[in-house]
Length: 217
Image (cartoon, rainbow, N blue to C red; front, side, top):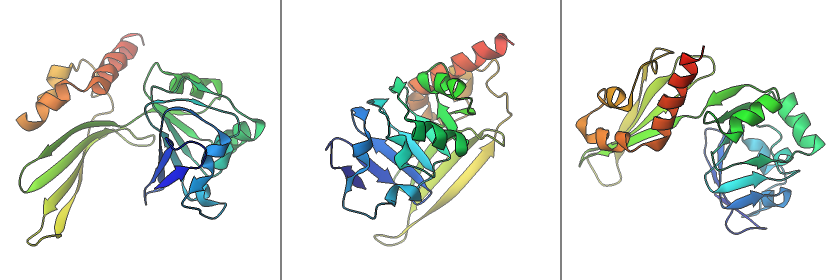
């Protein structure tokens, strides 16, 4: 985890998968990539996916060029503007960066403006747990494969501090959403997950927008 020297509300959460999440409020400036704890100048080059989380609203000129190796930029629906320096724009085009976000948001508009590919963001569906197991369920979308339901399962071991589990992905038809309401979708899951699913606004928006687009073909 890293903290911006410019804005104490800007926090970077790094993952071994190459994902770097940015949490905060308001805008992101070039200086926000100067972080504590201090790291070598090229620390941001270690990540290929940059995810801008909710409550961040704008990205200023010069910010994105700090992340020269990103191949995927994920924008939450709170992001309503990106100002690009020439270096920012060149990096996005050179890397053919995949833009991810929700339908009918700035993310999709930005991908069209920059002539970059767009893919809907993954949707975290539910967390189901009992005394033995914790299951994190996500609807995932892939640029080169069918969507799937991903289960990331954590299981308590036989002794304190011992954990097991695993990951399971169930492939879906590419057009699984056609004619699928929230009620129909939720029936595919356990009773323990249904309440969370029915209150999942991102899932609701996806199903409504995807069906609307399909109907307009």
